[in-house]
Image (cartoon, rainbow, N blue to C red; front, side):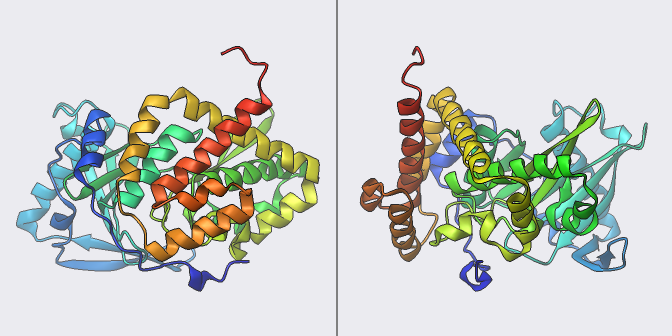
Length: 354
């Protein structure tokens, strides 16, 4: 298990450089928005937000001076409409801002905004954060290389993200895991193996139970599960390979135990290969876009020299691929991982017509 002191709780925020901005503009991520993260910091009061069990959630509900509240609400509704709609003002009269919460815990210190449609009482959340290059790379890799799509926008130093729906992993373990029938535990075990492999291969770190969600999908008389990351701050930063492997976090142990009880070694290896093959196909299918993103990352600074050197050694030991020794930054390390995955996929499928 990982000693959590190894994880950098105070990871520095890395600015988004011009090359990454140009990439984001090309793919419609860099769009002018009507309000900035720093504007939301001007709240004048707050109250603690508790969960249904009266536990402190580490979020506070914030309030603004009356003369500013109306302008802030209007800007947040416009931001929501840019993210989820066509950006016009036609629907704004039917939207209201119910809540603005601020998280006092973690690196990104986000604002969570609840937007409600008064015509049908449906609501959705958006998150406003300080832009960080690490997180932007993580969001892009999630959208391109995972089974999940995720919408976000960036403008100058402000990042806006959609809400990732699902049950937080720690809550699911506490409230639902023990009551699942065996067949559903087997399906969830399969998904945890794939999630673990996916996080490792793309160097998405710190997937403790509260940093991902469980998404059940109902299909006739059965339930399938997907595990989705919802925190991307630790993309390609840490220097220990174990930090990129969810199986080594102690609060994921109930899932690890579930896998051990429900899957044999051959099944585990099969699901790992399936995930590596899926990643290889996505890399090959998004060749132009992923190459542009990797070029940005290879020309960027998103970690420390010590972390880079330590991770290279771990990866050489894990893969026996000596190409890692030549890497000078995290982008080059990730490129070697992707090349390794694609090369092994192609050698295992030499019969496929190309």
